[in-house]
Length: 358
Image (tube, rainbow, N blue to C red; front, side, top):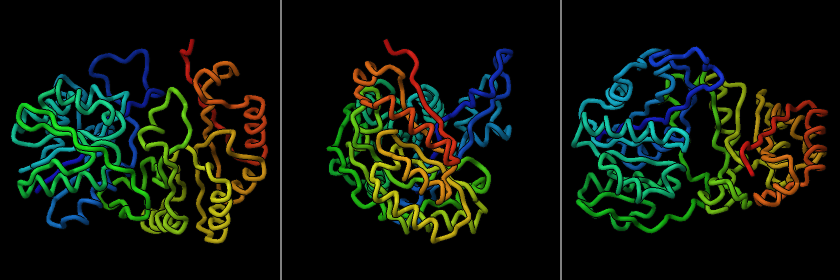
């Protein structure tokens, strides 16, 4: 079984110019594809004979290996497909889903016998409709994929039915089948360490480390919380430290962005994490994201001592009325105090706002 996984496209909007014309060189946001490397590690653990390749398309575009010409999508398809590829899995994001579908069409045209599918937050709520609309798509892995995708590959290889594979939507002849949802993984330490060796730019590209998943809040605009069933989960502190130590010692990484929407949701856990970071003396810095109502000046000081250098706060709107309308519910006076306190203790505060609300 030969499997080829590929990242979604991420244009570096800040590098674009109003002088750009069709065919201009693209500048992409390259990143260590931690999610796909985790998926590869899960597949390798299931069957060491499967050959799973990970393609970080943004890195290849920046390097000029994929030219931005009239055959752009075909160039990408050619890059993804290797000799004898059986299954192609494409990562998705909402803002680039149209590109991903275009790539899937070109992959299918080049390799009609390959099984082509999607995974990620952009397709979980639309899985059935995507398969109904696009013949080039054969399956969608919904929600977390580290258990569903290896089960799908094993069933495919053995010619078994897929009806009992939770979290899978697939094409069965002219019928679209939609299995029951898979419950979120309770213990994230069960996940294998991502196969960082499978990406040759792990030492250099932007790195968003998977330290936990989920958010218990109910903001009306956000797809993250329902994607994770509004369950807040963290990897254990020793596991997070082990991954950082591995990346520091093998690839020289000294800075980490934590990929978690609400890192300080559990105040006690965060204090314990900071104590462990100080004791470990890893000599690294880190950033995280959270809400202004689940953090306080005392915790900020502790985070600064533990190496935190930047926090992203999703404030979304400066109107107290709109805070209520979008079910965010922040006290903006407290938000201002937290932003001031963040800067005062040497951590860079970054605030996000959504433009276009009524």
